[in-house]
Length: 567
Image 1 (cartoon, one colour):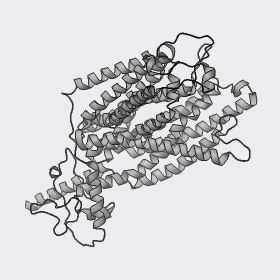
Image 2 (tube, helix red, strand yellow):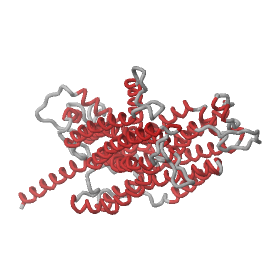
Image 3 (tube, helix red, strand yellow):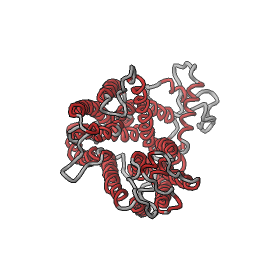
C-alpha cells in the first residue's frame, strides 16, 4: 500500500472535479502549477481508470515473482526505484512547460475547449503511471510480509511481535496518508504544485537509502519455487485418481527439505476436502527406487494437498470481506456529497474542504490502533491466552458489525440532513447543519477498518501456505478491487431500479432530491446477511496453527507411550 499511488489517486480525483479559477486578464504562462495540471489528467481519465484497476491486481504479479523466484527484498528494492522513477516523471511533468498543456480559463474548460495534451505529453503521463503501477505491484504485497519475516514465529515474543507489527504498520501508514492528504495537498494548492510533488519524491529517496542501510540486519526468506504449479499438480493428480476406491493406502509424504522449500512448516493430513487426499495415494509405478516420485502431475505430497486445502478454506472468508468493504468504500463516496450540502465552517475564518472530511476516519485509526495494541490486546491476552487478544476471525467479525453500524448511522444522519435542507430551502440546497454530524459514521467506519481490514490482512498472512506470504498480502488488494467492482454494480443497479415513473432515483446528482439513506439501509441489509454468512463460515473454520498444534501433541503422546512401553 504505497502512499505515492494512493496520493496520486486522491489528487487526480480533485483535479477532475475542480476546474481553474476565473482568469479575467491574460497572464504570463508560468511553468507547472495547478493551472495546467487538470487538463492533461482529465484528458487521461480513461487511462486513469485502467491504471486504477491495474493498481489493484498488479500486486498479484509482484507477489508471485517474490514468492517463487527472487524473494521479497529484491522485489521491494526494484519496485522502490520504479516508484521513484514514476514520482520523478510526475514532478517533471508539472515543472516543465513542454510536458503539459497550457493553462485554460474556467469558461473554456466548461465548454470543453481547452487545448489537450500532445502525444508526447500523454506518453509521459503513461510512463509515470506505468512506473507507479510497477512500484505498487511490488511494494504493496511484499513490504508487510518482509517486515513480519524479521520476527521468529516459533517463540511467544515473536508471535506477539507479529500481531503488534500488523497494528503499527497500518497505524503508521494511516498517519502518513493523513499528512499526505493535508499538508502535502495544502502545499500543492497554495504554494507550488512542483514543490508538492517534489517533497514526496525526496522522501522516497530517503526511504530507499534507509531501506538499503539495513541490509545486514534483515532476515531473508528464500523463494520456494513456482507456487501455482504445485496447486495445479495437486488438482490434476486428484482429478486423475477421483475414481480410485481403496481401504488402505500409502500416501506420499517426503521430508520438506526434499521438496526444495525454505522455512516451511510441516502440515499434517486432515479430513477436510478428503477428495483431494487421493492425489497423495501412491500407485504402482509412481515412485522411483529411491522413493522420489516419477511425475509431479500424477502424485502430490501430503504437504501440497494440505496447502491447497489452506487456500480453499480461505475463499469463503474472502467473500465476506468483499461485502464488508462496500460499506467502507461508500463512506468515501457519498459522505463528500453530504458534506457539500452542510455547514462546513469551523469558526468565522475556516471552512473544512468537503473532500477532506474523511480525515476524521484517519485520525481515529491513528489514535485507536496504538491504544488497541498497547492496552486492549494485553488486557485481553491475559484472559483469553491468545497472543493477539482475540482470534482473527473474531476481529474480522467485529469489523463486520461496525460496518453495519456505520451505514445505519449514516442513513439516520442523511435523513436528518435532507429534512433540514428541504425544510429551510436555503440557496444551493444547503442544510444549516454542522458537517461534524458526519463524524459518528466516519468514526464507526474507522473502527470497521481497524478491525476487519487488519483482521483480514493478518488472517490471510497466517493461514496461507508459508511460501505464499506475499500472495496472501496481495489477496487483500484483490478483495478491495472486487469490493470496488461490486460497489459500482450495486450503485448502477440502484440507479436503474429506483429511477422510474418520472421520479429521481435514490442516488440522483441532486442529493436533496434522492434517497441516499435508503441506499445505506440496503447496504446495512446486505451487511446483516453477510454477518450471518460469516458466522456460519467461521464456526466451521479450523486454523492452520491449531491443526499443527494438535498434530504435535499427538506425536508427543505417541513418543511418551512408546517410552513407557520400553520401560
